[in-house]
Amino acid sequence: MLRALQEGKITRVGGDKEISVDVRVVAATNKDLLREVEDKNFRLDLYHRLSVILIHVPSLNDRRDDVPLLVEHFLESVCAEYGMPKKTADKEAMTALKNHQWTGNIRELRNVVERL
Image (cartoon, rainbow, N blue to C red):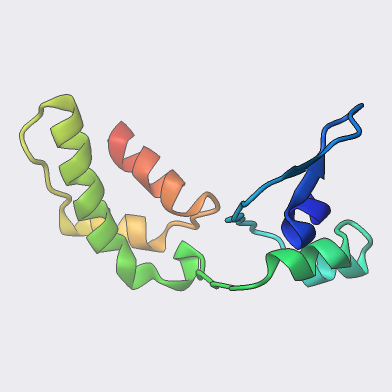
C-alpha cells in the first residue's frame, strides 16, 4: 500500500512485474492515529502518506444540537424506504435522543430511529 501511494506502482504477490496504478484513498478512523503511532500500533510512514487532507468530524455527543435535524432526516428516509406515512418525534423523545450517549454516532442514531 505504501508503494502504491508513494510511487504509483504495485507488484502482485508472487509476481515480478511492476504494475502502474493511479489510486486515491479515503480512509476514516475513530482512533487518534498519532497516539497509535506512538504506541507502535500504526506506521508513521503510512500515516504521512494518508494524512494529505485531514477532516475532523466531531462525534455526535459533541454536537447534540444536530440530533433533531438528523432524526427528522432519518424519519423521512426510513418512512419512504418502508412506504409508510411520515412520522414525527415528540419533544420528550427528542430530548431523550439528544441526551443519549451515542457510542455508534450517526449509524447508531439511524438504527434507533428505524427501530422506533
